[in-house]
Length: 451
Image (cartoon, rainbow, N blue to C red; front, side):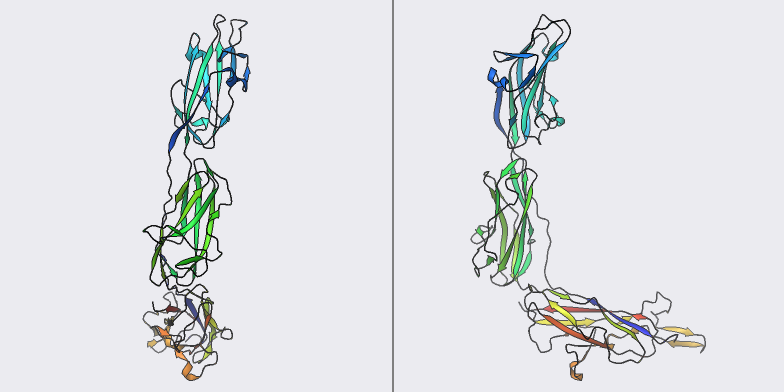
């Protein structure tokens, strides 16, 4: 043997016995367009609030002032802005004019975003985001138009008559995604779970939005707000508040908010329930999230308070050598939101030397040139060389060899309550006649309970 010092390490692996099935909840929403108010400018008062240059108002007509020469003189007029709560999706402009060539001498432009961008209109033809992407359709909610009249013929006066803008707005809606609990989730009896919803405002003004979490009390779909009274069955909300308001109210297009409830489960074991969130607003909008199915059961949650069991550097033949952190113990922690653990089990694997093939460990022997034959040099420390106990200074009968099969940890059959730790301790017996080097294996804990 080249050297007689060995590093013996242990590696842990945690086991969490719980059912958690993920599903991507679909967002619910739709786009609806309805016709709204028709705006008509056909009397003097409709023009009076706008700004204009080289024009005058005569009997509801927008006309160019008397021309002074045969060169081009133009005038333009910008209408008052008409603001809506929701984005404008289409505009149908209609007008008539009196001039020699209406396609040249009268130009009408439309803006759906308050004049930030404009688009030239065609008489009696619908304008939308496809035909006029630069005018703000679908995003802007301030409708206005401007007209430009020009001629190089001093004998005629171009006039624009009775422009009508027949517009539609996008219909706003709210949508919600129940991000927790996931569909087909087990929640622990007499334990809490977190419900979370993300709510979005689409296509306009959604007003003041609130949300209420529900379950299916008397129908196939959720129909009953979850109780805010402690100990009510099958659920109750811990903080006593169900209906909650979005923090960003009032809601406008593109905004979103999150709401969270902490819910205690008091229903019967193995009972199934549907959960959703009802979303409403004072703008007469409502919707609800897709349902999540939850089953009330026993949820067992453990974690390991250590990342490895390290025995340090040892010599062949060392026996009952404690792990480095035995003074503190190695804790298996039962989460406070777990149900009580009825049975805890542990198993391990052999410790092996990762020699990258140099030692031919797979054959467990190597040719000895001095002796001229093969000498067995194992590269494995048997799992039974590791000893464990739940007592820091155990009597011989309280020590147990680790095996490759699950062995009960709580030998006394006592329940391990939620929010507590099960402390374990480890020792190792180092065999003679193995190659020096680091040896590693895994240790696995499992917990279960009757249901």
